Amino acid sequence: MMRFLHSADWQISRMYSRFDAGDAQELTNAREEGVRRIAKLATEHKVDAVLVAGDVFDSQTPRDKTIERLFDATRGFDGPWLMLPGNHDAALAESVWERAKRLRLVPQNVHLCLQPELVEVTGKSGTKCAVLPAPLVQRHTHTDLTEWFDAAETPDGAIRIGLAHGSVEGLLAEDIDSQNPIAGDRAARARLDYLALGDWHGMKQIDARTWYSGTHEPERFRGNEPGYVLLVEIDAPGSIPRVTPVKCGKYAWKKLALEVQGEADVDSALRDLASIDGSVVADISLTGVCDLASQERLQAAVEAAERRAAASAVRDNDLRILPSEADLQALRGDGFVGAALEQLKDQLHGSEPELARDALLQLARIQRERGPSAASAAQGAAA
Picture 1 (spheres, rainbow, N blue to C red):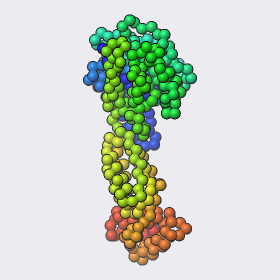
Picture 2: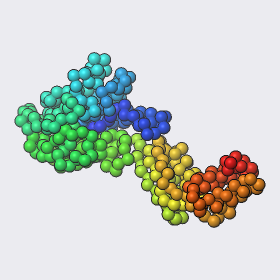
Picture 3: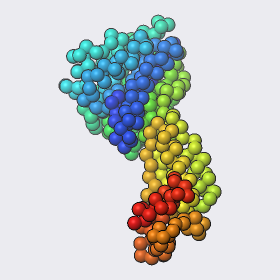
Picture 4: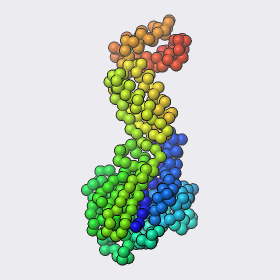
């Protein structure tokens, strides 16, 4: 029997510019930490090899230190690692792979599949495995680089494994990172026992012998089951592989589209916001209409969620604030502040209601934060 882990799309050194710089660096670091978790899983499951189906690096130009850390992360598993160039780290004449070799950073048990040539792996049980890689030598290609698998000769009794990075034709064209077509029936044509694919960032089964593992660490707000590696077990040549998803990701990327039109919606939104903790990267959007009191509750809950979340992005520009009569009655002030409040209340029905609502909201926030003594402090805001 042959047992191995199938992973892909690590994209080491990926940046997250939409988030706070400190949070973004934590997300970048999580991708490297994920490789250490894969090494640990490989050891725990006593696999014969780890196959990485492309896009180990996010670009051709990571720092030397980043390359060194990546290969250092593999040292938790001393069996074979087979790494395939993808569209982000194609096997160019001057590539990240050539730099890694030149710097002598590649451990002896890491095999870089830079050429379309057979790689033999012998399992712990003595089972032979023939891995047929289809490395990308440029970012985009319009030809199927797995075609050579069909005629490839492999040792008698060896399990045949394909390793490729691209799009299964007719299935993923709208969602892939690159073109790089792969025939949908390649496993059958090439008599493969298993075809390990990368490029689709979620776990996806194509047929009984063909799988995308997805990325090991989620990096998008897309519900396509990222954050896994696949444990693949094949009893003998011709056997149907047993594929078991194994959770690997550190963070869950959660998209909260919160629309409020009434008190029940506000309560539901508050419950959703309360569910965000340090294991979550959150995308929060607030839309709809609410009064000042509800907006204050929502704002406080959003701010608390942002503090708890691993990283977050918030959009609330489309949440309209319509102060209720109770909101307006709660806003009080003497002298100039009182006069300004009355003018703003009148302007809610005038030519600039949005400006009036913003000013009233600011006054309400000041009064909430400073208590009864805030009326005099609010004078400057009203001015």
